[in-house]
Length: 275
Image 1 (cartoon, rainbow, N blue to C red):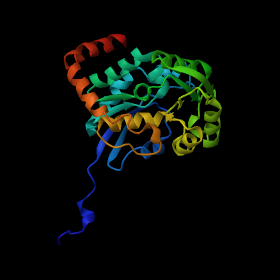
Image 2 (image 1 turned 90 degrees about the vertical axis):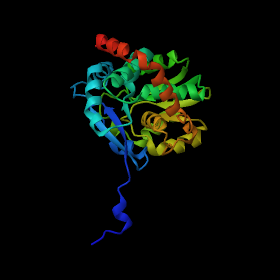
Image 3 (image 1 turned 180 degrees about the vertical axis):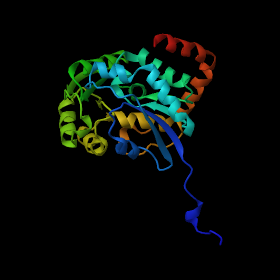
Image 4 (image 1 turned 90 degrees about the horizontal axis):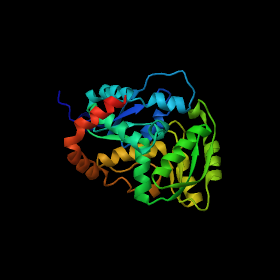
């Protein structure tokens, strides 16, 4: 008997994003909401560490060997880009450290690499931001590292607020996040950045942007949209003030890959020495 129904023609061809997540990520469902239906996430996690969310944890989950191992774990399903989905782990030691994290992913075999803080840096530059407010679920020392990372980008943090949580960040409700975003805002701020890929934000971005009249940038949004830009795909989900920021990422990434082709081995050696 011939199978003639259109339902037998699928499923649609999937395009993949490899995701390296810290061991405590609990927002996979929110993550999927940022992607088109023909894009799949292939997750690998860093090893479990019995420590609270802190400077120590950010250090542990951003170890180069963990990123290289996780990258190799997802290469079998042929992702077009591999993302390190962690704000604190990618901003903790500044721009140079973020570049080394991407180098570790690339030398492990990824065709393209993104980090959450690298995506933030791209958005800051593209939007021309000079003054922002930040809201984090972290303690003060970890929040201070984010302020220092932004300072390297030439961005002044005019106000920052933090929750001081050592764990269970995914359990924070929307109302709490929204109240802190509003409290963190300042008339001098051109945007508000909400840090942490484990903090729920998806459904409150649009109402907050409407109320504040400025971009509300969130960690998962930035990371996924930076990946989609490299894949030449449209952005999905809320956050209209950020649309278009990553549209040229595919061309830029291809050009950078071509330019860096002769230095990949040296970069890999530097990463190995650093770890």
